[in-house]
Each structure stands twice: as C-alpha cells, then as structure tokens.
Image 1 (cartoon, each protein chain N blue to C red):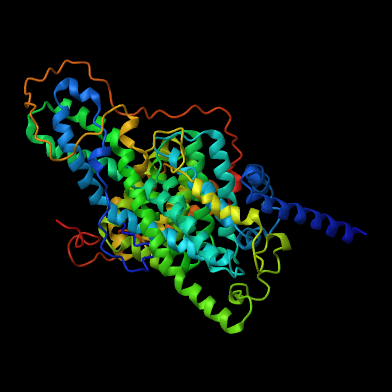
Image 2 (cartoon, rainbow over the protein chains, first blue to last red; image 1 turned 180 degrees about the vertical axis):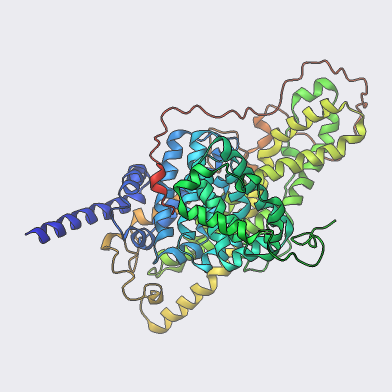
Length: 298
Length: 302
C-alpha cells in the first residue's frame, strides 16, 4: 500500500510537470508555467532532459532571455520582468546542472545569451537579481570540474564579466562570481590562462585585493574563503607566486580576519598553505625581479 | 582586448561591407543645435561620423553575434525538427530563429561601443571648429543619443542578413543529406542518431517531436521569434530603416554629405545660453515588490 501510494504521488507530480513544460511553449500560459516550474525544479530530478528534449522549450526559454535585452540600456527592467526572466534562468540552470544535458547546453552556446545581463551595471534590485541568477547558471556549469566546460568558458568573455561582478555586485553575487573564478583557476588550463600574461594576473589580483579590503567593513566568511582559495591556487603558478609576495594584501597576513578564520578550519589551513607558499623561507629566483616583471611591457 | 574571446568561429568570414542605405536621410539633427549656429556643421558631420562609427565596430559585432546565433539555431532546430520530413519547414524555422537571435545579440552588444564610437568620430570631425569645449561636448552627446538607435538598427540589420545567409550554408548540407536519404529510402526520414536509444524515453508523448507534421502550437514557438524584441516595439522610439526614421523626430531628413555649407563658424558663441542637460536620466526604476525568493541557500555553492 505504502509503495503504491508513493508511486501514485510520483506519477501525479510528473504529470503536472509535463503539463507545465507543455505550457511553456504557449506565450499566454508561459509566465505561470515558468513560475510553477522554477518552484518545482528541485522536486523533479529529471526535469532537465524533459526541458531539453521537448519540442520548442529551449527556443521558448531563449525568447524569454532576448526579450529582456531592450530594457538593459537604458536600464528599465521592472521587478516583474526580472522575476519572470529569472524563473527562465532557473530552468536553464537546471539544464546546465544535469549530466545528460550539460554538454548539449554548452554546444548550443546558450550561456553566451546571459552575458549581456552580466555586463549590466545598474545597482537596482531587479538588475542585481538578474546578474545573480545568471551567475548561478554559470556556477552550475563549473561546479562539476569538467575541463571541457572550462575550455568553453575561457573561449568567451567570462573572466572580465566575473571580475565586474566581483567589483560591483552584492555580497552574494561577489561570492558566486568568485566561486566561478576559483573553479576556473582550479582547472589546469584555467590557471595557465590567467597566468599567461602579467596583465591578466594583475587584473584578477587587483580585484581580489579590492574585495579583501571591502571585507574589513563588510565581513563575509564565505566570500573570504573563496578569495583565499583563489590566492592559494594562484600560488601554484611560479610567476604568480612570486608576484603574490608583493601584492598579497597585508590584511591576509595579520589578524584582521581572525574571527572568520577561527570558525573555519579549512579556510585557515588554506591561508596557512598560501602564506607558506609565498613565504620568505623559499629560495628566491635568480633573475632580478621574479614574478611577472620579465613579462611586463615597460 | 585583455581577455580575447574567439567564440566558436567555425565558418568562413567573408569581407563584409555594411549596407548603410542613405544614412544621411535618416540621421537626426536636433533643432536645439540650430539656435547656436551648429546645425549646418552637424548636418555635414553626422552622416560621415555615423558611417565611420558603424564601420568601425560592425564587423566584429556581426561576426560574434552570427557565430553564436548560428550555432544555437543549428543545434536547437535540428533537434526539434529531427522528425520533420519537409525541409522547407525546417529552414523556415531556422531563419526565424537565427535572424532574431543574431539581431538581438548584435543590438545589445553594439550599443555602448557604438555610443563611444559615434561620439569619438564627431569630436574628431568637429574639433577644428573653434567651438567652446563644453558646448561641443554637449552637442556631441545630444547628437549621439539622438542617432544611437539608428546605428544600432543598422548593425542589427547587418547581423540579421548575415545570419540568414550563414545558416543556409550551415544547415543546407544536413538538409540535403536528409533529402537524399529520404529519396533513397522512399520513406519518411528522421534522424535516428539524434535520439539514441533511451534519450527520448523520459519524454512523454505530447512533448516529443513527432514524425510528420507538427501541431500548430508547436510551429508557433518558432514563429514567435518574429515578434522579438526590438523589431516590434511600438512603445519605444526605436528606429526602423524602412519606416521613415526621419519623420518621427520632427526634424527634416536632410541631404547628406554634399551640401555646401554657408553657415559661418561662430567663435563668439554665447556660452551662457541655457543648454539643457542632454544625457539620458539613468536613475533606476522604482522597486516595489521584487520577491526576494533568491535566498542564499538556493544557489548551492560549496
């Protein structure tokens, strides 16, 4: 009895999800369907293949994305428009997360339609929410440590766009953007990409440093943790490691963040490792400046 | 560019000359300028500046937009129309989609670079006029804002045209393969490779692409690309090259580059004249009831 009741509930739930997916392709029913599906997306684990394989659903979701472009500049996004497109983005996040649909999602270049959103600068809530949700889609892609995903993203403008959110976003946006950069750095080709030129390294280093400085006024332990992880990973590259000796913020070397670090042994360990990696007890390189000095155009 | 991006560039990029039909008849020369004796200068300078500004950025913008839109369209249309036996329908859906996506991407991407480019070109062409800097700058801003949508529309159109010809090449091969296959088999072709065993298993009947004709509501999804997003915005003053742009501003469409200018350069321009601020108000919209349902917990980061 118990088992059949569970299975009946499951069938009912599935039927309602299928119905909602069908409604996505009808412009008159779409807004409600987006709302309902984005609420239910966690309950139905195979929503992603359903969204991808059903006729016209991805096309309909793309229409939702590009229909917002005209209100980006000048910035006129209303809360209702923001909510609606964010519901569509939540479904795209679902497709980006699922193993069976992730590569097709990438291959169709769908993440690139989110970049105009990441490029916005308005600090109003509808825009902040739009950027955060868009970052969530990219975050879902990088979460799985797939080097193909990283290669794809590096062939696009993702790093400057993340840096922009790390500079001007809310604490939550900063955290997701830093998480994305961290995941890119943790990949071998990502680290190489960032450390290939001094300009790239310093672009990342400057933004990380600025975030550390703002954390003094507005502490966030989870953001601090991602920043430390980024620095630690950068220190795996020899040139970057040399450069960090001079450009790592002093606040990471003193007790500024001790209250955060006391709560988080992992972050503490990472920071110790970072300080050890750039420590003075290491043998200095023979050629003068070390770090990126030899790469800088004078 | 610091972080260079080459996004999926998998087709031959032919030298593209942007088609700018009589841009001189479409540019807007704000009447405010005439009160200050600047109108004649701008009449001559604006069409040239617009032309140069567009040419400066159109190639890279169109290339990126068309490349992305083509890839998206190819993947999604071939997936959705895997069971369709009428190639004309497939091509039609692909045209509607790729035109809309490429145009939208080009428009949204070009706006800020084009703004900078138009202003720069105007400054360069007017710098020898001995106009007070402050006045020149305000006039440049005014004219740039007035003509930005026109330039965006030109670039959007260039992307749309290029996208349609590109998708024909990209999808054409696959479609002719299908045609041959069907003629050889004498039966309806569907692309079995697209749906390997099991991948369609989870998709219930009403949601699947079906052999034969699609339902009306299914066809409509692709037809809906036509009404997106700048093309049909009646409420906004977006330009459309075909709709007689010059008429809507209350300014006359002026002859473009060849008019001999009789107006004198006026160095004694009265600086104190009340010149309204020309930059667009950028203050953010009021936010009332944005549901904060994006809680910290739903983002799932470790």
